[in-house]
Amino acid sequence: MLKLQESKKGLTFGIHVTPHASRAEIVCIQDGVFKVRVTAPPVEGAANQACIKLLAGELGLKKSQVEIFSGAKSRKKTVMVKNIGRTDLESIINSFVKENKVVEQESFLENI
Image (cartoon, rainbow, N blue to C red):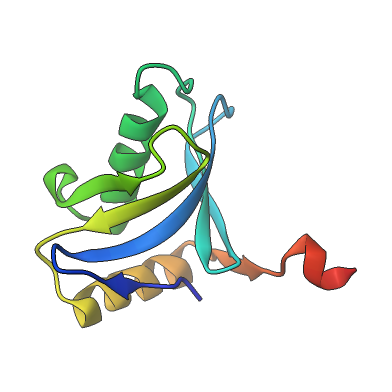
């Protein structure tokens, strides 16, 4: 399951981004983070903005509620969602996972 953490400003969770993908999508949950593909290149924040747009759109949130909290220049990022309660966000994520058949994948390293 996706690991949600609470902070003073909002709720955070991790994503692992693949830029320059053929299509934008949330692929799966692996190691407690969303694996995300975006079509934008990792140049001048384009991939970060694409991540925000994708996550807000898929989870039914406003873009102003979603921000890259850390890892702006990395594939591994922490996303913050503001102005929503933990139970509400968990419910939204669980509904999204069920509706879109997003699966939880085991880490490659766990299989070795």
